[in-house]
Length: 306
Image 1 (spheres, rainbow, N blue to C red):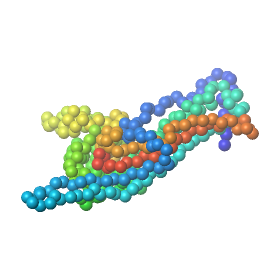
Image 2: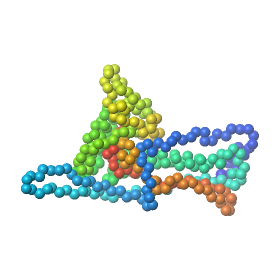
Image 3: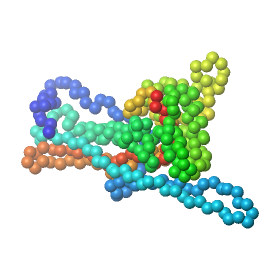
Image 4: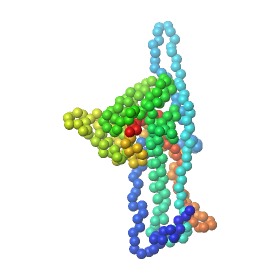
């Protein structure tokens, strides 16, 4: 496939006209507000494994031996990097004769395509968060689950509201309470971060009201809001919401990048190139990168699949 002169005849006509192309620019990257971008060396994959450490102390009566404990290892999980690419090809004649520099800007168009794809790839892990068929953690569970296994103490734990609750004060209070009472694999309480609120643009106005109203939203009295940013420190991942989220009613709360274990593993960054076809004199333009999003720890992430 190639771009031929005949397919874009209007671009080769010199009469006065306006050509509409790339009028709108993409917003800055959104996913880096939540995912940590990590360069992954030279391997074709990333191997991860969780290890639960030691339990708590027990009473040692006088003259008796100390109790000993051992760490416990979970299964190894492998994430394989995938290559994503797009190309554009035009004939020599089309490139030479086009008058409005549209074709000259196709390299910029490829760059915008890469940026858009990286957003879609990163947020696909969050969209898969409740189904968990594509992106799973170190226990082969979805990011949000009511049955996360505890390999040291046994049993299960949850970071998914069940039943789900809409984005409101009750829902946020429930997640904040869950976050502050979540146990580690060793059975210890952790100080979890609940700093980032993720939602679709349809919920942006509701989120602003909840996080910025010092008094209880919708209340006729002077009850103080328990979830305002000034009290919880919680802020939106993106103020206007993330349009790449497929569930317009679902929402989630996360730690900051680097603490929530949500990772955009980048094996090879954006790479652009061009090539001249020796037989046709066509010119080919390419863009590609290699990456895979993944997560290790579910505990700094809590969701409600409304």
